[in-house]
Image (cartoon, rainbow, N blue to C red; front, side, top):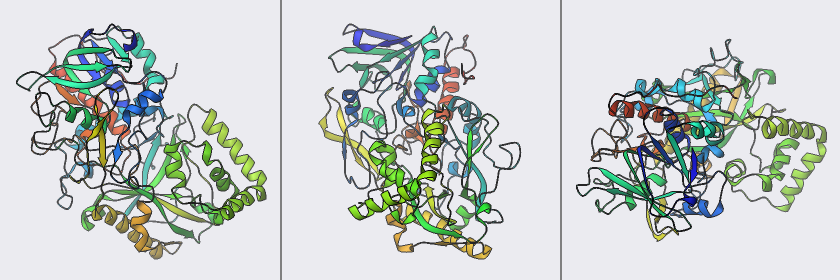
Length: 565
């Protein structure tokens, strides 16, 4: 059933076998694994079925350097479905090297093997509606995909690396009816977790406190508690729950909120091909089930080890929108549509560059000089992106000049000085707001600089193209829009011991026998990959662990996605 805390009498005590706090990708995926079993599940969500500005404002906080990080209430949604209600749908698994202890990367290494997560990727792919779990361009479509750059080969980059795209799937809209129909799952909306209350020994969660903005006050009791609130909210509730643990739950070694990672990303360079335009393809192809797939250039693990850098991928990209010098009516039309684009996408799409009246008029001229091509694109975009259930993932413009820029997405090195902590101010529920101090290191920029240098050399050796960029501008280009929004990673990291992490290999908080964390907060490293697919895979892994922790019962096998009804 789906219920709301607005109608509960204040003082109500809620009981369940499993209490999950947060109904986004991790929380919903986890709850579905117990649907129609003999274990009662309480799925707590702060938001409602639709966004409420007053509830969303509970995410507000402070940012030490606003030029490097977006406001705390952006790129995450306090609503049923969480941030899956606005995500772009890119699905990519982590790589085996991401789990390794890499001597050249401080604080790297997971306490679990890659294979322990990889086994859950097929089911995660199904839940995300990203099709088959095949991320190799040579086999994913049944026949080899069209090459990105025909004739180009490199020992440094894998051009067969693939990314798949979800619809994108809003987990609440897609799976809400199954949660509602399940006889043992209760979804409680408009309920805000404001404290985790441990017993007097501090080794067991007795209950959590829930509040509503209208003044309601409740308790939830359960045998197992799972926090699935996102990488920024999880450290907030752990640090604020200091009644028994003065430094906050799980924070005996001052690790909660530290090692905060996003990704290092940006657009850079001028790629010019001398081969025929037909030999360059940076668009999407469809798998048998309609899933959009796209190649990218991935730095090989052998190269990462040899040159001691992090993980990074690059994609061919259209010229930057803000510069009307691209003389492309389609790109100028998209630029002129900026007021209609949401903050989350506009920030990365347009960047902070100011455009004067002269440039604005040049954008208008680009549009009016190419009216038919521009109109066709906009009509096609409205059909395939706005109206389609499975949406076209991004803007793809074939370059008439055979020129492109590079879209870079790189791993961020774990850094204990990059952190989320509690601010002095409090929200209307009395919970301290967060203070974000996101930091990057020289090693982060070196990963990108090394990859660019290698690609430039490889193009020169090939002879069919060139890459030009200012080596002194790499850092500025990668930080033009600041930390990559929406990827909140590492703030309650997994470790082998309590000295290394907040949670153990089973995602259980060290020292607390019934408290678990689901989501990217537990990732010790960030990989090159967007986190959603691995968030879901780790949630499924946690569900298996919880099944084994309970006494033998009638618990059924996990629930995965079904075809659209």
